[in-house]
Image 1 (cartoon, rainbow, N blue to C red):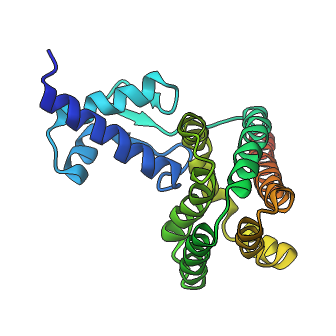
Image 2 (cartoon, rainbow, N blue to C red; image 1 turned 120 degrees about the horizontal axis):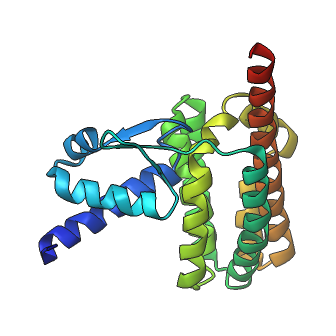
Length: 227
């Protein structure tokens, strides 16, 4: 029977591991073991196993027989499906957030954007991806719809690991093509320009996930050729 304390620890594992996955700290196909997690989280294996199995039951992770799990390898079709869902839901959240925008929210977005730029300039990919997540959710949280935020978080659990595929080529090209689009979001939030903010988010999701799907498809074709 699960004790109250172990239930709290299990939830902590679920939340901490989920945050790492959403922020791209694991790559597609990467193995996650109970032993290593317990060591990293300074916990006993039992709550770690329970938290891990919860993510497996939700389809976020793929269970393995040897007390481990994998970040699933998604197909281009699965990425395309997630893209379509995220476009609808996150554009709605961005619109609602912009309509409730304030200079204070815009200021927080700008601070996070500046941190992101510094991490990117330093080549710190882990910090970069974590700040990408932070920026998006600072925006979405402004919509004041907690249930919607939970849905978006669940979608980022699926796509977060695939942000790693955007580095370095996509990131460098999109910076040249779109300029400082996060500043445009901050300005749109400040002026409550919902259309402008929504369009920036639409382009971000569409372009990034289309690129990821193309990378996965190209890798699959290459594997078939080698086979």
